[in-house]
Length: 208
Image (cartoon, rainbow, N blue to C red; front, side, top):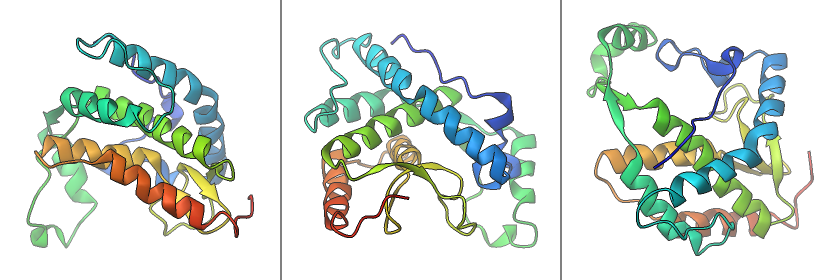
């Protein structure tokens, strides 16, 4: 596989282990991040296609945003995602976020996904999002910069009015974690779930 990772500008990079990431951006930084993300999303799909096609057995895969493309993309993704051990310093940074409650956490963090896998989560997430938008033209890219308690706060998401929110990076990230834990993914059913929900919200959608 030949692959060029997404180049996230330093001002948006953050540090997951110390709790310094997208949810904690101030309003202006969040808006700048969204504009940057929108500026690179199309080229990331091109890079995703190149990465898949340069992998043996996947030379004919096309990033055509079709439902049929999902099966091969899922198999490819699950074969290339990877993890690394967490350093002691990273573990301490992570634990510091849970001061006073760490003793009740049964499964301390021991590993995390690699930077390449994190980049792939962005690319696959963008692809999944663009599929939904293609099939549901009332959907569009947006950003939740108001609901600070939302897990999607500050993230680029696919939205329709106030009811439909789809965080494509999180979906891809969860898929990577499941694959690395030996659990099954089913992107066809996952797509159907979100597509059905999008269609249910079509009549009541209001662009924001």
